[in-house]
Length: 295
Image (cartoon, rainbow, N blue to C red; front, side, top):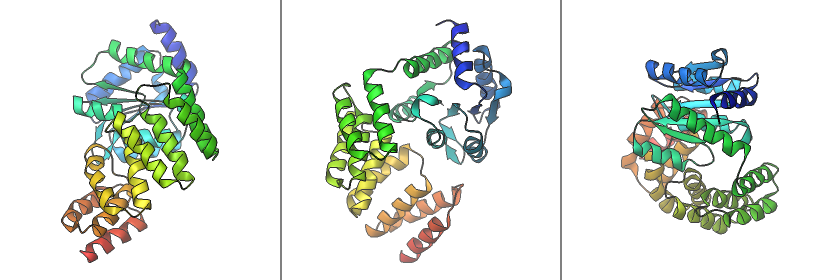
């Protein structure tokens, strides 16, 4: 695809909508703006942020169709911003690209299948950025049979047709060598039907294919918490905490599991996460107080 062709596709995809860049480095943010401009994106439609809270507010209100974010952001996470965008669109109607500073971050970004469309290791050239963006567009416009099944399963889940979603997700598993995302959708469909043991098996099957698969890790944790199997749940918490953003709901789960498994020595670390959190809800504030009193 030529630069002109790619530019036309990007402009058609974005339309009158917006793009957002979240990058703590001012110089690298400028480089990313240049990359987008070189591909034909009007800079008048590009907003840039260095702070997590400001970027999150922009995403929730402006609903940018194209998001480019650094993985590691002070007082926040690029993946949390991608999730905020993901909640606003169908998968085929948005693009998220994550830039990372080291190979371990890239491995984590790659494991965030279903949320992050592409990841790029810094430093990179305009040609590399263009090639990655083109690759994403090709997948969006010409999805594989596996990706089509995933889209169908996701839409059925949104419609709460869980049995149909389960069947589609199971069909998808035969179309991919490492179908972690299909396992996640199958597990989610089972979980919503109250079939917790079967859901747990699906999430764990997904983790056999990708041990850091974000959605399968979260799915496994939520089933274990629902079953009040706090001891097993707590074993998975270090991996989630080390690699992925800790949301308000997730921190609450960490606190509950820590108290019920007597991991009181970990509470100071969770309290620091609470202090650093941008969104300290009344529920979480009460929970952290109860956890500290229990200890």
